Length: 328
Ligand SMILES: [Ca+2]
Ligand SMILES: [Ca+2]
Image (cartoon, rainbow, N blue to C red; front, side, top):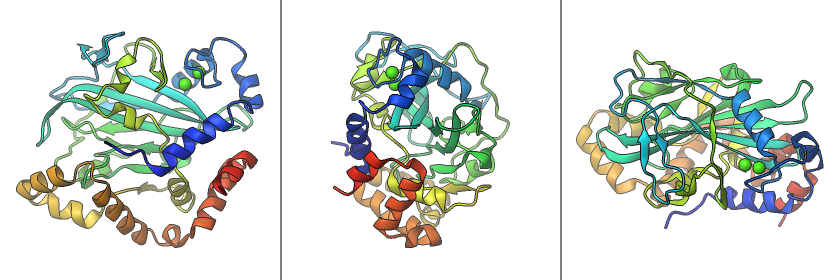
């Protein structure tokens, strides 16, 4: 059974404990329909999904053509069409902060270890207390998440030019890993290419998935064990991720997980890559080890104690409720 990241549980508890304290958000969101019961109105979620919608660069020769749409109401993911549909999710993480996820759902992955169905996502942490409306603080892009080739990245929104709108992201051909810069696409385990990518045409609005316990728009397939979508529907901005991003220069995109040395080793051998990836995929032990190595390499961020991690997190969120929860 896959385990949620520690801070995912924290975020869920935080969201629940704060659900009655969203005065500011409720005022912004209005009192209209809230289909997924997270305190944000459907209309407010729709507005944010469109405001921060990313420009997605895909390969014109991708085996799966474009991200797919899936049959509404089906408990298992059933591909309707590779029509370029983008799915989304919006949920509160504190009084004035909201997380937005964008999902590209593909009917297959045709990399070196091909498999049916493929889930990739991009996330933003949004502040709702700035003048001029909602503003992105950080962006996160998932790439080979929870494998030895994990090269998921993050950045201050300014680093990717996406404070009031979405960034441009690159989707690798066949694997669909997402990168905040085109150059990073070559830094994974060697199989990724974003050469010649073209902009994915908008074929409709972002389709809101709702929440895990309250799917909307017929997305009851989000909890299917056929794919890892439910694992991706929790926060990407844990205490340690926020601390690392805070310690990162505002013009830099940083790799948040994985070991560059290991990725480099795998890069030179398909055989090694195949064995290592198979053995280590979704293995918490290897992921934790990779995180430890990454942490040591991050210098300033890695020398932070838990107390300073919490301090950094609080500096971003400035939430009395959050700090109370963290002390538990
Ligand atoms: Ca809602
Ligand atoms: Ca929602």
